Image 1 (cartoon, rainbow, N blue to C red):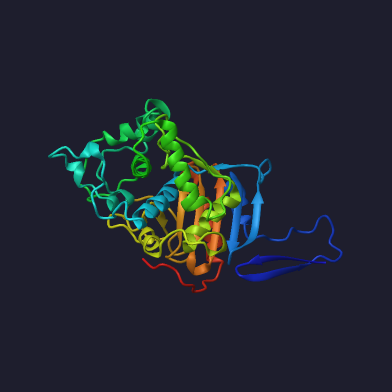
Image 2: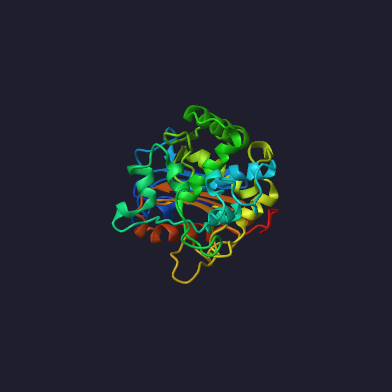
Length: 357
């Protein structure tokens, strides 16, 4: 009997005739993600040329589970912002139309949509505090701002000139979700607002991508927590990766306009390792923590990345999507990134048409 596993684009065949119980297991592509030093990987998926090569769960997890996005939600939010830009309802280089920032002399009135998407709004923010409760994100998400998260985020003053520095901010992505909602409805009713957002996400992203498991979480005011919280199954995260790969969904249904996909993949001016609410496989400024693995895999590779080691990697030059979901403390993610880089560098590049930065 011959068992086959696709590794690095080739076929690895093991002759199992007469195999005993003590024989070594067949190597699999996703093995590096399930080593002890890369724990706790809960689920992983590899897709090449639109087909599942390998899917694996840790004990206790299965197709029945929905997995939290954490900051991978930012890339979902960016796709929805792109839909509004393609509709002509928002403009990339125009000031963000929050009425609260339009008082004469308010310097926040100059913040552009591009700057927010590139994490360069200049708004005062502390993403990770020491101690942990000093984090603006934790305060708004989990302590005192849960009934009106966007209101608290909109009230933040500038700490730098818009566009002058990169500062990763979950609150910026929350504001982008609030911006989407305000383009869809004038209602103040939380249920109406949440329904309008959910319907838009279904029509413009989830349905054409054949994503059926998505659960969006909202605050008490009906704002989608677009920087931090939504849930999907492993295969649906893979389907979202397919959207990031070529802008298309099921049966080549168009979702992301090529120009918007190119923008998302373009290095921002203040951090070359970050694009439009998505991480790039490129060198970051000196002193910045590694996000991916430059030098392993193509520079065109991008990834939605979430807290505790959530990754949806899309590599158009390899026609590959790699998903890793789990729970690994952020300071311990080095071996996980190394495993992801090892897998991606084992896959040959095959030039395909895709949106170029």
